[in-house]
Image 1 (cartoon, rainbow, N blue to C red):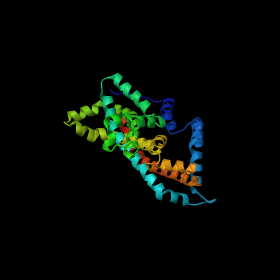
Image 2 (cartoon, rainbow, N blue to C red):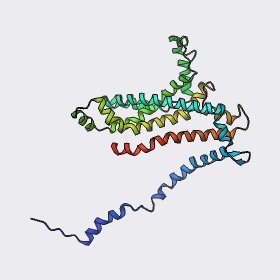
Image 3 (spheres, one colour):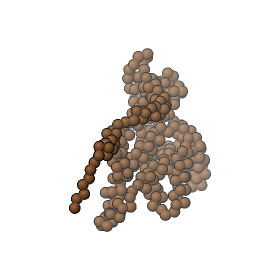
Image 4 (spheres, rainbow, N blue to C red):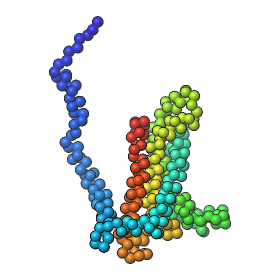
Length: 297
């Protein structure tokens, strides 16, 4: 027995209207975004143009002299030092933050989870001079732990590359916890159950399911940590000064004229070098972002 269905012109129009409107944009959509676009243009566009103009200005004309000078001698050493410090601390913080976030997400204690995430939100924003003072008072040459544990006798120095790296980890690890915890929550329990029913071990589940799904998020967290460590200035300036070569220190010296006078445009060229490095690191993460969003949606 078949049931005949009839369609009226009104019903057909109601069915076709959403398809027609699906790709149509509302005329007022861009108007609502104008305040945001104006803010981005003022806050980021104008400084970027000023930086580019200053970096390319050489004796009243445009050229690549400042950019060439920014990748030579002490400037190049400082740029490599910043990249090394940022990459090292970001990699260590990404691994430790992932382990800590996994322990928090899988724990049954709701109070522990909220306490760790709240503390991570506070510690991720604790930097600058207060952080440097706290580490100097604790692990400096006359610090509490340095004196009690005799760390100086074993070659420990806070005012070195690894001392600065340890200080950066204090706020980078909590930042990674905040970044990766939502992605860990997005891993569906059905995936683990299906892997276990198929005879897969925990290592095989993480190798073939968990890590591939989390990889874009982990890379995004690494990019965020790299950018935070790469652009940090106040902590390093107040703790190690110029004993550790960093590009942010070179920019500050060039702008203030502590070493050479009239190097402001070189400082802008160094800033442009930092932007280029940040864009290259971000280019690794962006192609994988859609893959992660599709699985975690």
